[in-house]
Amino acid sequence: MTDHLGPLRQAMSDLSEHGGTADMYERALHKSRQTQRRRALTTGAAAAAVVFAIGGTVAFATRHQPDPLTPPGSTRTSAGPQNPTCPSTQTLGTMVELPAGWSFASRGVECVEAWAAADVQRPDGGGVIYLFHYTAGLGWRFHDQGTGWDCTDLGLTEPASFCTS
Image (cartoon, rainbow, N blue to C red):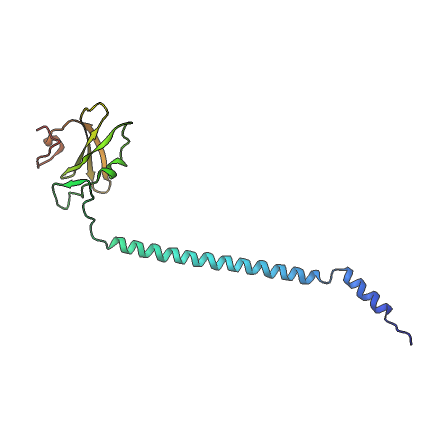
């Protein structure tokens, strides 16, 4: 008995040379890329939702937070709705760049109405006071440095140690 499988084997060999498996490879590669894009999109959307939820919670919590206490290193000498919380020496240090060797004195900050004053220690030992002013909407800002100011020029109605009169 003779078998006539030669032409069938030749046809199968021809098909395999044309890359019959390449179609499956391309489809698998396409599906893999599609899955990766979907996962990236889903992960990005989930991350955005988490960030939005956390940000909303933090914004809500900070908006309904009581006023902070007076920070350490500061002395509050007057109160009222137009008088802000007295800043600390650390807060004032972020507003000005002191020359090398200079530092805010350890006695703290004196606040009167919307003014804050802090003594500065210098290597030569001379006394200098840095004066800051609070403006609603802007916050604390550096105003001047010196040894004293006229309280009436500053618009103060209360006495202050940094005033000369």
